[in-house]
Image (tube, rainbow, N blue to C red; front, top):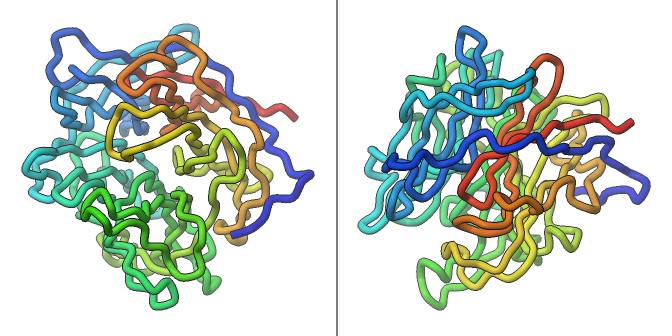
Length: 358
């Protein structure tokens, strides 16, 4: 993990453009909110969101919704149904179920949309992958199985993990060879699952706050068998919380995008107080910031925002299923402009324009 230089800065800002999706009254799949969407383009070029749809009992599905525009700006959606539901046994527990918080990256060299999502199964939240040609029909690749790495002195598969997102093109791996890389966010406290077990940190880590990690799959392996994407290795810490607005934890947002300065990664930061990480009623605030990652070594942070690019301010961001949440999860380039779609208080979906400031 690198230390950001004091003079480093992120020459971008977020400008709100409104709410694009809210729960549809009378729709059972949306009874508890629509939020945290992935995005992509269907083969005909139309922009779609793949929102998390939350039914009664906090059971989540992934929907498909075509984005509509007003004067070229995303302003609404037309629903196209559900494309992924917790149908697999490992996506369901005795008293819970869900496929949650999808992130999608179009990877041209694989010719696939790669979706990461959180499978809320018997042992809590675990990351999983699926792939598609058209955003409608998805093939599960299965749960992510992190390779054992002796120097960490632990097994990453023991821990809940969220915020998995892939880079859109191969990057240099730790050995210098091209690899497909994914960011993820392990959570080290096992006390929620086994009372008294508490926090188990990997070797060399003395900060228990969840942060952003990176893992890799060699290009040749994934191109020979796309299921290799579920078997990442060479796990490295990228970043931990540094600033007050992200004091509790951080996690990756949408897929990183290439900009002149490097890889631009939007991320969320959480401040406040959490008693139970799996309870929705928390006294916290989620805000959006950004990092620049080194193209030659994406585990290295070149710069990061000291203050958030966007914090909860509007009514939809401050009041909802989980109050005070701005949670960026998707970016789409539309007519030369970059639009960021984000969850608002775990109830609605907003859109903001990502603008360059210098």
